[in-house]
Length: 250
Ligand code: PGA
Image 1 (cartoon, rainbow, N blue to C red):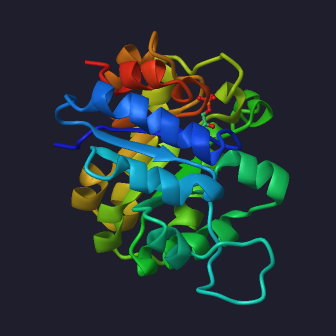
Image 2: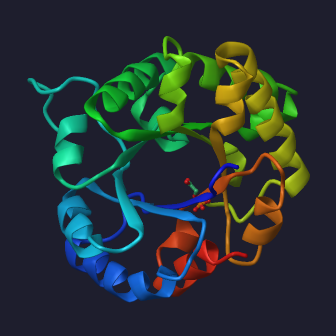
């Protein structure tokens, strides 16, 4: 059985003080959540304080991005090892905002995935089509490209530390969620692809999150789909009570 993983993605929101206040308010609200993994991906400046504040709770802390090198002359970048040292246990890679605004290709994402895993971080790797790509009938092609290229060169055993997040770009921050059936269709396609690439056992065990305007009101119907194993949530993860409702969706 795949353990559902509900993860907040704060994007460029929350100062150190706001992040700490969030965890102090949220940790009690989510403490009773059984059988659910809980995470928050936060801005780099807040990670250390957030991880300290979350210690002893069931909330995992992760980065929203990292570089693929261990160190070097890469002004403005952060290495996987630095995230680990700050208290992170995972990192989100290849988010559509990284692809769209910062020119990340699947080749770059692949280098980051390998570096993060090698450093000891778990990875949430994002994939998803734009509205134009969906309307052109290219959803499967685009999503499968993101997944196959992003995970290229990994061994089946590496997948135990990878989560794939399917986030249709047209559903992110728009209030327009994929229907549960649309999400399920793409998730099933991803799992079939993974089975071809890495074998059925690794594909069956890998968790696939859905992301894109997930809210307390719709999380239940999305999570009820057989191949949806979690959610990556932006806007609705920013308030402790809303985050707690997402986590306690059952
Ligand atoms: P949203 O963002 O929940 O605000 O749509 C999701 C994401 O980008 O991870």
